[in-house]
Image (cartoon, rainbow, N blue to C red):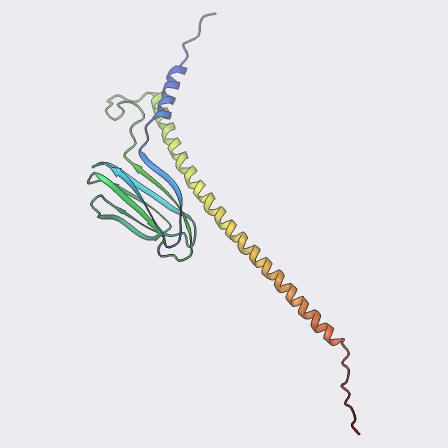
Length: 218
């Protein structure tokens, strides 16, 4: 029997490794607790002309709202929103320096918040070498890798969305369970009080009242 054609596994593995090791934009993803009457700020250094984006969402607490603002290195406010449940902001840095973005819960006097944010700096580079300067069409394998890469990014975004929704729904369910438990305990106490009162009232109906005798003084 003749030898089969050379396997295409090495090129496939190479392209898969390119997919896995493709550089991602620099940034941070964090979920943190924001107490009432509190303000939390984060800082990130951004070069001039580099695009950055901020996505945030309130997961638990109060009316699921928070104040947010972003300042450039000169102290100018380039973004400000009040009592937002979620929002996205994209900006290209006009000056190089440390940018500050803050979340405030100072308008709330008793509600703690759980806030999620995703801060990304820079554009995502192409997954294939010289992809932006190529004059020839992509091969079928390269096109498939690009399609897979885009699909994986969609999957990651969907997983993040569903993870946040699951955390939010779980917090609401736990809060509803606590309210139901407190209501059940209150009803139980009220039932015992009413039952005891009815028992005392019923007992008074069958209690023989003795007439008070007055002594006769001679």
